[in-house]
Structure formats: C-alpha cells, structure tokens
Image (cartoon, rainbow, N blue to C red; front, side, top):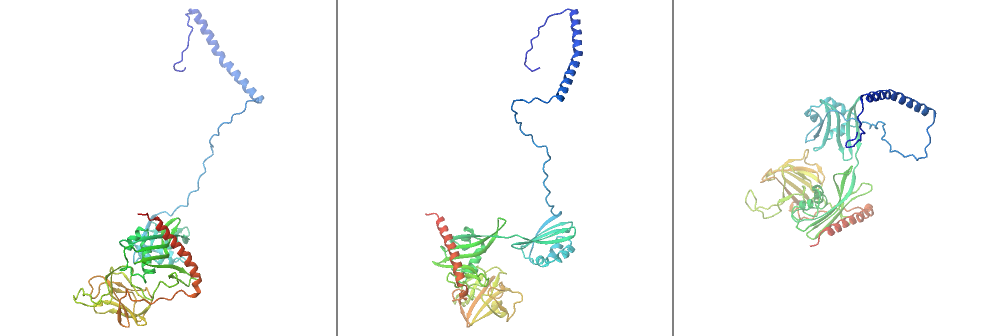
Length: 452
C-alpha cells in the first residue's frame, strides 16, 4: 500500500451465521486459487513451446548496448629493472674503478670480470673528474653499471643468467643554432649572463677567437658590444650544453673585429678566420693563461713592491689563483726549467727569430717538462704560484726580442699563415652563409631594444 493513499470500505454488520458461511466460502476459494493458477501457467508454457511468437508490426526499439563483460586486456609487464640498491657515484680526481668499488664495498671480482669483456676495459678505465657512474648492487654483488663514455654513447653492463653482458647505446645529439647580443656596462661576464650566454662561450670568445687582437684584461670598455652565433646541444629534446662558436664579432673602442669558424670538407682546415681569410691566430698568445685580470702592467719605472725601489717591471703580472694553468705562448723549445733568483720557479721558451718568453713565480712545473723539449702553443707548461720574490699568487710573463724586453700587450705579433688558395672558394661560400646569420642576429637584437 502506498503511503498517503485512501481506501473506501463498505462496512455492514453481519450475523454469526453469515460469518460462518463467509468463512467457509473463503476457505474453499483459498484451496482453488493455487490449482487454477497452476493450470493456467502449464497451459501457457505448452502453448509457448508449440506456437511461434507472433510477429508484431510495432517497430523494434533498439536498447542501449550493455558494457562488455569480457575480461579487460592485460598489459604486458615491463622488463624488470635490476634488483638492488642504486648508487650514483661522481668521479673525483685520482679516482679509479678499483678504488670506487672498494669504497662502496662492492665485489672486486665482479669488476675483474667486467674489465675482461671485449671492448670494455678502455671505456671503463678512462675516468674524468665529474663523470657519473651509476651502479646497482645486491649485497655488494654488482647487478648493473652505466656510464656515459662520450656525448653520444653510453656503456651499460648488466648481470644475466649467463654472466655479465656489455652494450654501447647510441644517444645522438641534436645541434641547434642560437645567437646572442650584448653590451658591456660593467664587465664582460655580467653582459654575457644578461644575454643568456654561458661562461664557456665567453671564454672561447676571449681566449680562442679574439684573444690575439684584444686584451680582455685591460682593453674592455663600457659600451663595447658583442654578437655571437653558436651551437646548442640537445639530447631527447633536453638542453645538455653549448657547442662551438660559429661566428662572432666584438666591437672594442669603436673597432669591430669579426671571425667565423671554418672546417674544410676534408677536415684538414679547422680554425677561426677573419672574413678576408686571415687566421685569427698569431704565432703568440697575448696572455699565456685564460682570461683573467692584470695585477701589474709593463712599466719601466715601477716601484718594486718588496724592495721599495724604482725598478723596471719588464713584463706583465697576471693575478690568478694558485694552480691556474700556464700555457706556452707559442711553439718553441724549453730553454730553461728550474729556479732562478727572484723569479722563483721559472720556465723560459725559445721560439726562433730571436724571440723568447719567460714565465715566473710558478707553484710547480708541468709533469715531465724538461730542457730541450719541443712544445706547441697552448701546451700546459706549469701552474700559477708565488715562488720567489712575490707578494701573492700570480704569473710574471716576459716577451723578449733578441734579449730586449717588449710589452707583451702591445708588441706586434707575427701573423699565422692565412687560409690557403686550395680552400679559399670553399671558405668564401661558408663565410657568406654564416655572416648572413650573424647579421640577422644583430638586426634582431637591435630591433628588440626598446626606444627611449
């Protein structure tokens, strides 16, 4: 009965006799109802089995599909990773794999087995500070080892049922071209950061490209400008670092210097050149160490800081941290390596044509450096220190011509050979292409500067 509905009863009082008769009739009806119902149901079932269902003229109404009751598709399980503890170890100076395994309490016998795998020993043993080695171990037993062996290759070693297996996986780089433009207000590095340029690119600009024409320690002025087209490296869409500078110009005190990188098709020529084919290199570096600051310039009447007397300073002092690399300013032969009075630990190189260079106050010499040895420009010959008569760590650098001291910052430096005629046509094609990119980069930078 539904809540709230109303039922009308026609109620009349009755006698006891009538009530007994009524009860009898209800009892008989109660017995007959199940029999009649069963007969009707039996008849309907028999008719349903014999006679086909009548065809209705009423159009069928399509019902919505029920969701499938089939079991869901089971995705294949991923390949299981090696079980165990994972350690990422950053290589430090003087680290070896044997030392790393012992420090991490890994089974050194596993290392011996891995190193005997074909082609693995050289890739494993060539460790550099800053490299990352990923090791997976289970209770000291190595399960897997991964390390990057080049920008485009990764070495993986895994333990299987039949022992260790090694594989070199290719991880190719995508090279994209980028450009930047900056104006110097306080320093070159500040301007570079504002332009989004990495310190490595700026060091290449100062030391490898324009370092023979511009003294980046003393000659930089507020208002100087630079523009660069360079490579950026990506792996799987992720930026991993900068590549080579492809073209650059630097305006210093109103004079613009331009350079492009050219590599010939046969790989014989690979260097920086001015647009006219003149090599950006000279036979000598302006400074025999990376871009830094000068603590004492060439001065014939300088007052000596220790002796307190007027004494000519016949070289240039470059202040730098102890241990900073000192490079040979040019190709030459070691004439002297040892200790010499106030110079402290000193190296003298002879370069031919009456030219010699001197490097003083070193903390130590390059390993194996000896008199009579031939060295190439840029070769490490020693490290900055404060030996001899020095008030602090710095390099004292002298440039002599037939024994006469010349100012290393201003002396005309002999040019390197220009690009040969055999490659000039190829060079000019490349120069037009990359200089057009440099010009577009400059135009974009100028257009982006808001007008005042």
